[in-house]
Amino acid sequence: MNARPIRRLAAAALVVAPLAVAGCAAFPPDEASVAESRAAMQARVVDRAAIRRVLDDLELAESSGNRAALAALYAPDAQWLPPDGAAVVGRTAVLGAYDALLEGHDLSTVLDERSLEPLGDEAQYSGWMTRTRSPHAGDDPRSETLLVRIVLGRDPERGWRIRFLEWRIWEDLAPAEADGADAG
Image (cartoon, rainbow, N blue to C red; front, side):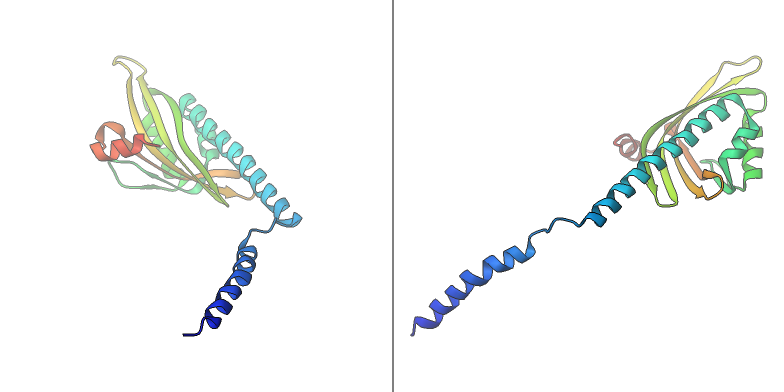
């Protein structure tokens, strides 16, 4: 057997391998890419702050029973998905559900964020909501902890609005769901 072809192959590999590795190395991004990445990051920070303000306003509006403030937070096509009933569709219907929730009670709402992800013109919030309903007369206040998911949409004229709010009562979650919910 002739050793020459094997030597040539080995020599070729020694020349080609470093070139292939160099070709795969990451090149520094151009200035336009860096500027675009920075702008996208800054937009996400601004979006997160604006969305957080909507969520803070939701806490305040629910806690004060301010129907006009609640109406301003919800999109016209908003949906509620309560754990024990049919979906409530449309801002007017959602406000009607608030009226029923608030009837004869004061409400205190506190949100505890697990995650907030702006995704272009939509954002998703998940976390805990503690609601305390205090009757105007008689009974003791009743608190419940809810696992919530809120989807917000960007309205070009009015900013971020709540499009979807789903909740599940913590005590009603199966153990596996509760463990997974606590991990976030």
